[in-house]
Image (cartoon, rainbow, N blue to C red; front, side):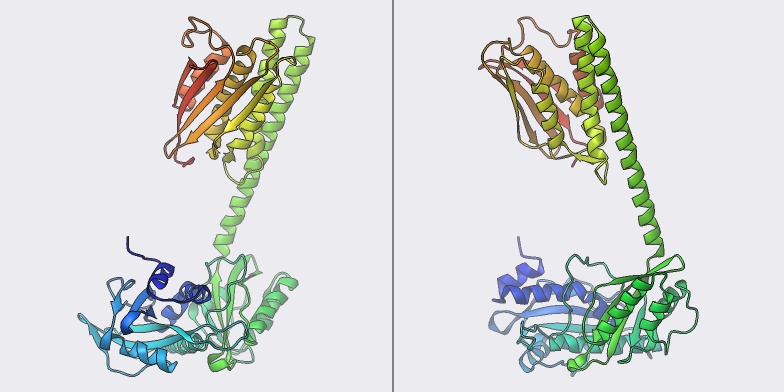
Length: 501
């Protein structure tokens, strides 16, 4: 299979080190912004053998038609086709000369931007790659004010790529989601005053309670004034001021009048000269509202599971008290079995009460059930339990009947598989998780199944529970049989539903 990722392509065709590759990956993670501002495709080229270049990444603009209908990643080019890339790389400057070129019926303008990575000492390093900025000219027309501001900002960021100051370092824990050009763009001068705000940016800030024109406003002071929380407002203002100083602070949410706007501030410092900042703004009010609704729903569901667990524990405690007051041994044994059954279900709800989703880590549950089952063995002949393999994460609707089935199998193995002699016993729960099903074997080294035993006709409540839950709730199969080396085993095949896979 041919390499397709940026890292794979770079490692195959070049000898760039890990730091250089990381820098190129960060650039590819942030360059949609420049593509949209440029109204151009961006292609990331790295020098390969014999004067050739290979395209290791590509991004198309969302603001204009693409210059390439076909994917260019993996393309190897040489000769006159890459002459502009060679000039940008060897001379370390942005190349903008040359006549338009044609791709089929599409005319395009070529530009080439050298990519540098600054070292740990802050010094600009060597050129490690070249960004081709290729614009589809088929829809060329007189640019609007918005387009002129976009293009000016794109040129500043392109120069920062050549300087090695773009992209900014990624902050720990920060996701790749961020406001984009289409969400709203605000350009600040070196003093922090707004020189341009796109219509979407103006609308986003209007949701915060500011209806006048943003042009001429001190944006840091405005956010500080609008924010519902003074501390949050001052922190947002501080991040804008940090961008004006040349830093790239983390993204920040501004909340006011029940609205929320996500902002990202980027410094503009072509050729190392701070000339202002770029602020992207996105109205995320509805997203935050849905997030809060989901958090409330999740908390409610967890509280329900917590209360169900408490109620089941109360039922188990009442059954335990009743068992102590019953004189008949069979009745006491039946009540004690019911206590264990209720307790096993309570374990599932206890786990769900601490989970953010309706799924459980089943290994911990079955380990606790197995330990509890071993405690019913006679003191003079202890039985040890252990698990082989892993169940992994299972949905709640599958975990509840499965824990009931395994609880019954473990109890049967401990209570009926050993004769109370002086030797200890062992029960093993072996599980293999495939793509579509669980293969479970509960095996013991006890005396085995009695002669003539037929689980299908047995009147034991435990076996009836096992058969009903396995074939009904779990839609699986079960087989009880003696082992060739002694003892008995139960073999279950349980299909995994979509949530489990």
